[in-house]
Amino acid sequence: MLNSFSKCPICYCDVKLFDVVDFNKSCEENRGKFLPLAGIPIYYSRCTVCSFTYAPEFTSWTEQDFLEKIYNDEYIEIDPDYLEVRPGANAKGLSDIFKGQSQHIHHLDYGGGNGRMSDLLKAEGWQSKSYDPFPKNDIDLATLGKFNLITSLEVFEHVPDVQALMVNLTTALADDGLILFSTLITDNDIKPNQRMTWWYASPRNGHISLFSRQSLMMLGATYGLNLASFSDGFHCFYKNVPAWASHIIKTA
Image (cartoon, rainbow, N blue to C red; front, side, top):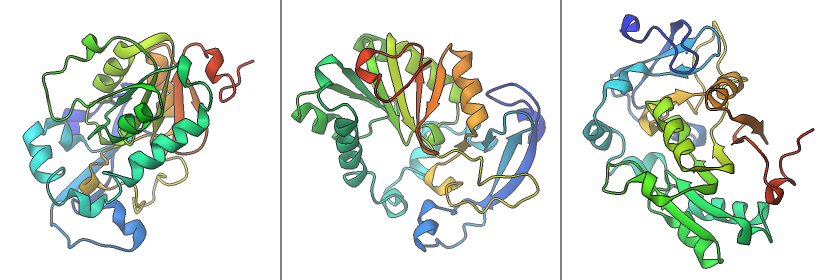
């Protein structure tokens, strides 16, 4: 298996097998809930240069595989917040960050699922649209236009093809735009010669792409984007900082 995926999807340097976990390892383990073992091994590889850690097996999965095995009727049991709690919290957080600036913002929520966050923002007067490429649909992203604020929350860790994700995001991004995204970085939790017990490394949740800060920097640089991180879990890609966002991104 390693020979087929021996180059990092981000920096194209060598990768090595890192660890193996059971398919039923889920994020709910962080709350003390453990699923029965599935008996299905999921191998993760790690880049020797940028430390991107990922599960190569999922690059060959079909959309139907993901729908049947991960994003099925049982998914809510291992991600109970994704329908209402998280979209509500994200909408409030975005409103607080850009309070009084929404008139300057043309917003796209990429990977927005049921569109709940976008609906909540529109109710507050935002110009907001939601788009999700999964499952496949008849909406052509290119026809939606350009956006100066794209959010992609709880998306990066789920994608089997990080380059395809970045192509989509940059296609929709205006020249003076920002991509705000969330994903927990691995720097303090995935280390050489240690087992991968981190709760976030959970294939049952579809957490198959795990980023270090270095890998995010290199990924953004490929598309001419700078990286700013506000915490271990909240980040931004940008080329130029618009005036309405100058209070959150300070440049020299």
